[in-house]
Length: 446
Image (tube, rainbow, N blue to C red; front, side, top):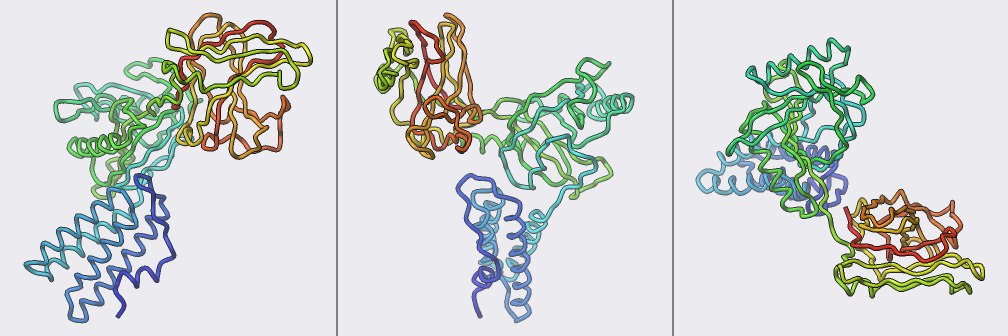
């Protein structure tokens, strides 16, 4: 008889392994649930053949762990294997019964689907699967918020319910509850009903309720099954904080919140909620011009290559920033001056945005990027206007850049991808003749 794990592998379509720390897609959970269900059936067959059935159950738990990568469910499956082996030292039949019961519980988690009693607000992401931690983006939304008073969450609920009823605002799911730290525990501080569309109603104070607009934000979310409680919120918070600590590119940016999806009509193990912590990406310095050697890596590329008369240079100041200076001339059909960095290939792979800290002279400049996806003559550029002698930040996403070749916009070139950027550049053009100076403190990734 083939080993159970081999039978499982032959009966399932191939499943690629996950990179460490990534979230897995819902279809993988479905496939794992199907495989685990088969394994539980095979275990029953081996028990009927006068065997404890422990071996196929252990193989199934190990297989589940391997398929789910670096996840809470994978760790749970590992713990089941460890505990079952210890139990088997005394009684392998009791160990098999225990492991079968635990794996059946794991199967219920894998196949659990939240009861959605109301529509989600426009653009909201789907609920996070149970026992999964994921990073997800919420769009801008409008909410009615009230503080927890002496009557607690029940009183807050009815204040909000009367608000949406009196203003003809449809009920949505989830209900948002913000928590405050209280010693080692937590307590609810605010409750919010979310408007289905941010165009509904208007911001402002409405009696005990304040309607306000929330900016788009990232959260780390843990899907939870069962009844909400302070103890479960604290446990989930600690798991989320541990997950965030393992990812230096993220930092906490707000208070713990619980997104509750069910009314009291949904009871016990059928209930579902999410515990979330708002996060933002930490600033990563791509180029720090306080390091004096940085400016030396930038080389001039001016219209002199075509006979023009413009000039430029990149030089460090004594105050910890770089100075892009020179003179722009239109003589001999010239009209641009620029500098180009050394290689930054691979350095922008995880970037969502690029931010320049600059002080200008009132003129307009361009940030330029070269990509490994195009030939070396094509550049992607985005313009920014400066204020005279005033420090400011300018931030760009990949969508802000336009592909150009010798000043001509290209329509048949793929959009810029930060993953493929090989070098950066700064340019002044557009007939802004005369001397110029752009001071740059840093270029950061966010």
